[in-house]
Image 1 (cartoon, one colour):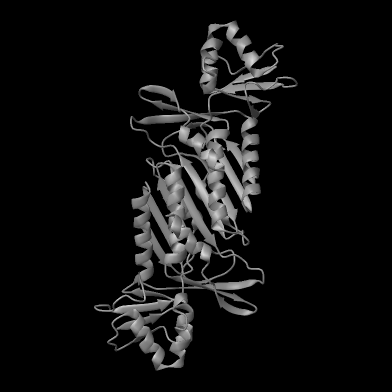
Image 2 (cartoon, helix red, strand yellow):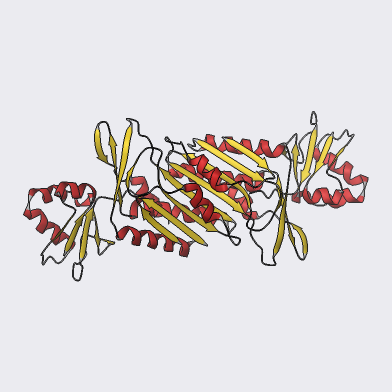
Length: 146
Length: 146
Length: 81
Length: 81
């Protein structure tokens, strides 16, 4: 199990391959990657603020919860903060499990918690100015299924 | 959208990274990788037989169905046949979507169809001999949710 | 008509494909014709609920009609992924 | 007690953290004390339903007690992922 919070970009291909390799007891690996999306009016950049200390604790607690709840053999969470441009990767999670359902559910569970319970805040900068991204009701609602 | 059926191993990291890159309209990328799992009594190898012609058609139809059903911007399916050892990757799917729910559901939908509706048959070779892998009721049942 | 066999159906019948001259109206009729031929076909087609069939590379039912069909394939439930 | 502010709460109050001397029993009491201080606190704490609070880096409620707490953080709903 590994959790990383960092400013630097990560190499998704290298991380995904390293995670998937050598798991001869695990038949299923799922990855999720979040990418900065260009918005309708043209996004210049996104800035992500976080709460150093609490972020790492929250991500580790969420990863432990996922392992305890699903039959997961391994979990990886990488989340960046700082400045990112459209097309850049913000974060990734990966799960390994003997069976595909656990791998998928573990990754979805992690993402739902990460969206609303990990202390990150996104601010979008466009030609019109800067705006904090509002939390979505659907993200809060997504937690109720677990 | 791309579907590949091949004997050769694929490089998961390279494929995953190439798929995820350059999707500035897609905020979410999900990958699933199936790996040959070591079984309790020691697996020597797995051999996968398929139905050339029908396999490609079935996978393309399933990829099209996923794109039509979820808000997917792109789909990749790679499935090997022939001989594979424990730890080797059998197949992968990848989905890209503006939102994470579509990316996850598209990948799960593809996997559920691929498990029971793509013409592949697995045979496991152990010290005790060879045995065809039986289809699981739960895999057939998984289709009913779509 | 080309008839294809996969996985343990292929192993029991002992060949991957053959050309069959038949007037069978449906898949079920074709299965009966094959079973009447030799024991190895009988062994392969004992339990139709354990088998699947594709007509011209599309999944079909055992009561599907064969008119115009060029390729019939018999195989066990698929185990992809 | 260390009090931290993030995202637009930090922007409205104008600083990321400060040390506050307080006898407030609960988070809600602390919020009232801060609001009474200066308009910028009032602007940040107008609508508590739009805010979240963490005590010693664990999410908590506004009626949670502050006894033994060293670090209080106020911020809007999180937008990770």
